[in-house]
Structure formats: structure tokens, C-alpha cells
Image (tube, one colour):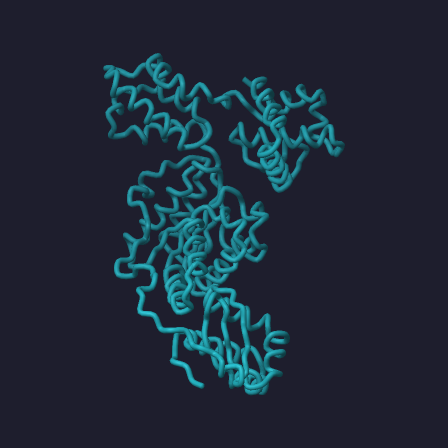
Length: 457
């Protein structure tokens, strides 16, 4: 019984080419040369085999090899059903549908880049200088240096701006194909394959997915940490990463933490993130915050109304991230538009921002002040927080102190670890994650932290 050739046979032919290179010539002739694909339906791939013994060999001895090859080709984890010639007599092939299949648009390539993010308007300081230099180097010679470039740091510090700047520079100065995406978009595109019901449609969609993400010269993927709970998407990204890297295509990745701290990302992926250059961005220091404020108000209605005293007031009030600075400036712009002052004085700025920046409790905080507040609250000593004791009455306060140091100061994990008895950054990261997880369910812990923060104020 013969069936009309569909895309299932096309993908099966690719499989045969792959398996021929992985098994002996004799094994291929016996177990694979006479196989015939029948249909794909609901992620079940039905294949005709010559004899019953083939079923056992293919589903047991060669199972892992078959699964791996099909996944590398399609990005789909199929279940395989093997049937003999006798069983085929009762087999009805799927109808050929003429419905319009879902595909990615290829007519006009969309880089998804934001043109307003460039190197020229990226304000550089001590906290982001290394990341900026690395980004410029990658933009000038993509695929030849720092591959992958892994940029990490807290949200709101300018990682996304820098990634778009790289992409915009490359598209402006070359004919390379650039794609910016987020890990959530990548995940949604991949899981879209599994939501289609028709096997042919799935095959087309899978091919378009691979073409979108692998047929590029530069892949920029933002917020990779959101793949932590997506095991199958991680597997697909592993294959995408390998194919691009082997072809010397540039990969740029961002995360809110270092590769070592992405504990729920597969080890094989984390190790690949370290192949190139991991570079972190710290919260901006006072001088950089002042420079950012001046850059943000340039060419606005308040540019010539703001003196240095007001700039310094905003810089002292927004120590967390660039987004907080941007929000503060928008607030000041709106208030100024309503009140129309001739000059924005410090008193005017304080009045305009009183309900916005006064909630900031970080100005005078330091690791030492947080350690003192936590030690006083739990009635233990600073030496206990820094020491090696692991009793319950010391470990929990130590974790809370590390968490507060990370949340309420701009100090990096390495510095925090050094101030807690020379612990490494991964120990600090683990402590912080434990507190974050407990905060979701423990109201008493939330109350505790609020009381300690009040002490800091």
C-alpha cells in the first residue's frame, strides 16, 4: 500500500541521512533502509517496518538515537508507532488539507530593533564601561569576538538598550541579518508548534521556526532567565545555539544574573554561555546618575530650567536603576507643564516629586548599616552574621541580611559575599533566592523585613 508523499517523508529522508552516519553500514541496511513513513498526527509518527523484530530493535536499542535525531531536525519530541505491512491494510492516510497554514512572515524581515537605542545615546560610566566596550567590539566584528556576549545585571540598568545598540550598529554598517527577541517570544513561538493539530502544518511551522531563529547572522535574546521552567524550549535553544555558534554567527544574551547563578537552566547551556564573555552591569554610581539625568532632559522643555542642585537631588533620590530616573524625570516634566515655572528650583523639585522619591529608603544604606540593623533586630552580633556558625538562630538572619544588602544597596554579589566572612557570590545568590521564595508565602517574614527597613530609615 503506497501513500502520497507529504512533508513527513521529506523529514524522514533527512533522518535517514543522519542515522546513516551514526550506525554501521550493516546495521543501516538491516534496520533502517526499508522503513517507510506513513503519517504524523498529534506528535505521533507512524512508520512502516518490514517485520515484527524491527519494532523491538527500533523502540529499544535505537530509541535514544532516533529521538535525538528527530528532535535536532524538527524541534519536536515525537512518539513513534511502528506497524507492519499487515497492520497497514487497516491504515487510513490523513486527508490533504488546503487550509492556510500558520507561518512566520518572511517577505519583509523585521529585526524587532528599536532604532532610538544607539551607542551614541548610551551614557557610559564606571558601572557599565566594560559592557559598553565589549558591546562595541562585538558590533564592529560580529561572530569573531566574544561569542556569545552574555550581559547580566539587575533590571533597569541598560542591558536592553545596549543590545539594541549592537543590533542597530550592525544593520547600519553591514548587510547581516539581525534578530532581536525575548526569551518569552522565543518560547511562545516554539510552543506554538505543539498547539497545531495537523501534522503537515506542524512540519511547516517547525521549519519556519528554525528558519526564523537559525537563518540569521546575529541573534539577540533578552531575559534568558525566563526559560528556567521551560525544559523543552531549553532543548530547542541548545540546538539553535550550537548551529549558530558553529557557523560563527553572533549570539548576544542578557539575564538578570550571571550564568553560574542560573541554576534552573541546563548545565550544558550554562557552560556554553561561558564560552564567550560574560560581563555585568552594576547600578550607576552618583556621577553616572547625574550624567544620565542630563542626557535624559536634553532637548526637553526643562533642559534650561534645571540647575545642578536639582540634578544632584534627583541623583541622590534614584539610586536603584535607570528606569527609576526616567520615571522621576517624566514626573517632573508633567508637573512643570502644569505649573509652568520660570526656573526649576530645588524647592520646586521637592514639591513635584514628594510622593515619588520620598519612598526611596536606600540613600544612606550600606552593607554595614544593614548588618547592624539585622543584628540588632535578632539580638545577635555582627560577628555571628559574618562567621561560620550554621545554627538556625544565625543562618536565617544572615540570609535576610544578604537579601537586604542586595535589594537596598547597589553593591554586587561579590562585594556582599566579602563583607559576610569572605563567602563567594553563589552562596549569596542562593541565600537571596531562599528569602525571595519564602516571601511569597510567609507573611511574618514580610512583616519582619518591613520592621528592619523602618530601622534603616
